[in-house]
Image (tube, rainbow, N blue to C red; front, side, top):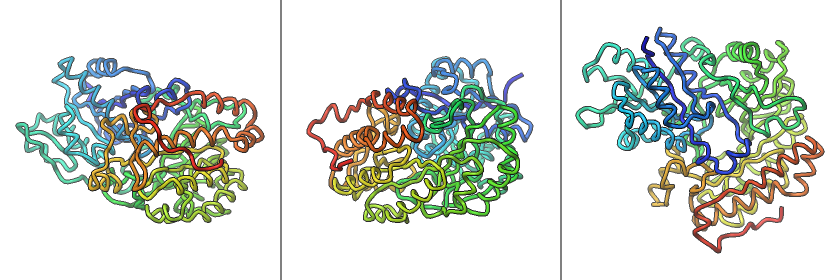
Length: 504
């Protein structure tokens, strides 16, 4: 029996993460969007399979063979990652899978790409990739409509499906966007976790710091809302949804799915994928109360915003098993924060990080160097703030203009040089090219970032805190990670770049 739909998550870990891919430091996360689309399509009575090339370690050729064996009506490659930056860089994997399918002469299988990047650049994606169709937006109604049409053996006019892009005699045809899912509880079943190799997923190494006896596997993800109401200049997430906004699942629906992950797959380590989980206090508190009531022993991490937490909320989050909150701190300069419409201040950040730590919750501090107004002084202020806050773990990124973000549009308008390949949007790739600022070159920013990360993680105060809080084994793992030096093409080509201007 022919499968109606195969959903594919491509993989190209070595190119995207460089030497870090060899150290098993990165997480392997279940492909939530593929699981949600699968659940929606199953709901209308069609058959679905998922191929997770990353989790199973499949090459593009092996993925193509698997698709050929299933012989689906439609093969859909989903490029929405578990954070906004993960979609564009995965387009390199999309291209390789499509090329392998073409090489094998798999003309009977129609192909579609979906996700954040295709939604941000639908016309360009159709021009550059060897796909038959593209789904702009969330994809639920669009893919369901396309499958219905394909099963009928359609004429071209039957491809007038909201959200669908297709080709007609070499011409690219675009339909208007499909409406968003309304009621998440009523219209979206729980994700189709049974279609995944659940034993292969693992948490980030830092997620399990201090969890004595707890392994990084099994690992699960959950969403409690879709969308984001904010308009941060550097963020591209709303390219998928079309407009800022947020839709909530009911707390009971969320916790019922968490219960299923715990019961059926033994999951304890969980990431909340929401772009902004800690936003609606009533919603979050109700989820926490249900988790506490059911007695799940969880190790959760989630995203929060500096100006959306208080002591009561933090206390309840900790009781529910939220051991890590990731904050978008971004900069140590109020001038820079204002320039990107972040809506927070450095002093507010200090207060919230202190309050979070006092509640017993570890902080993942996310920083961005090289925003358009950044100079050496402001980037130095950012790293001085990082050293002062001494978060349990940090991500230090270079400002990158991801397709779909206002920053991308600004980069095009200003004529700034962008990465030549989609893979080079990965912050850890060999060819990663951040944006220049008004005062610094891209290479200046990249060098400052790499030196700053090493200096922060090697700092005596940070390492002492890690040893005292998590133990010598965790500290040894951090030190081992520091031996994995990233190679950077743009730094190998250019000499005499900026040095770090902060004391650490």
